Length: 428
Image 1 (cartoon, rainbow, N blue to C red):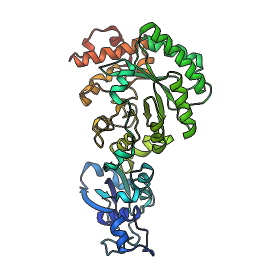
Image 2 (image 1 turned 135 degrees about the vertical axis):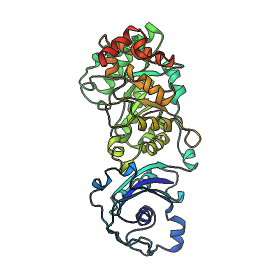
Image 3 (image 1 turned 60 degrees about the vertical axis):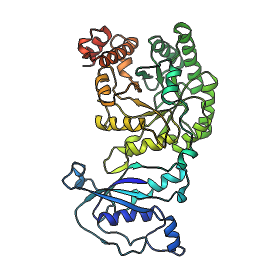
Image 4 (image 1 turned 90 degrees about the horizontal axis):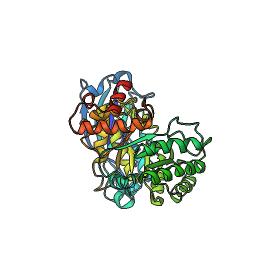
């Protein structure tokens, strides 16, 4: 069952029928073989239509945001039915539309499912806007896909952090560092008590630090940190690549003692990530770079709630959800809704650790706690750690102090903790 938010100049029933026909048995005219029996077994069904009032907030600015090529005229019905509104030149109207697709059309396969629920329907001229906002899947998908191996509890075990927020950072500068630079930075962060470090999404197996060289440098630093402190931070190596290379990259990391790999989910694709899950021996950290192209526009693409279900079905252990008071477009309400969705069981399972990133620092702790009510989070602070005026170690400590104060109900500026005070003075 797919739920869409649509915008159209046609009656909502006509626009919904166009989606159902295009994405199941129909085309723009009846064709030989399109029998009544075939349609009965394989046609998509419009289950529910809920109009969105023109005065509602969701329609704000819609009149100037119709998709290119949207038309007030519709092609003939794919079903040959006498539907109302064969053409229309009225104002834009909006609604939530629920359409069910027979499992027999796709089987429990992401590769088959995605072209159906998020394929050529975006091109239909009957639609001035369309966004997939939710999807409900049958139990057959749970049997076909492997859930995350580690998720929250497994990640806590590997990071040696049984409770509290997991504090992490991103290697910065994003690109340009040499292997020796990684050794120095990872050692400094590890000795500072960081739980998690990750490669940047723009730095995979590429110069000037090819992945094999980076694995050797980082592993050496982690070995030293573990020897000195008894704790070994997790490091997510960006192994995103063509599928065959990605599997080899995973094996290099795992065989070298690494405890996490990262994939750029929208770049390598959902099916390739599911393939990696079947192969993986370590947690998969899913970065969602490019999500803005799918989710940013209110009338186009795939919303975060629908997206996270599809992503979790691939078996990833960690999933980026945005960040509170971030530098990106998402509102705090949207981030909170995504975190809640990721923490909600999917098909009775498929657990996943929500990841917060983008301009996160000590000062975002109170809002994060207020909006999520949980410490089962991985908070990634790049500049918030590495940019602390007293160094990365102080950045890590400041975030832990901020969370301790927040959970104790103490305003951050009254904590008196020196690293936190310096962070508040510096970042504002």
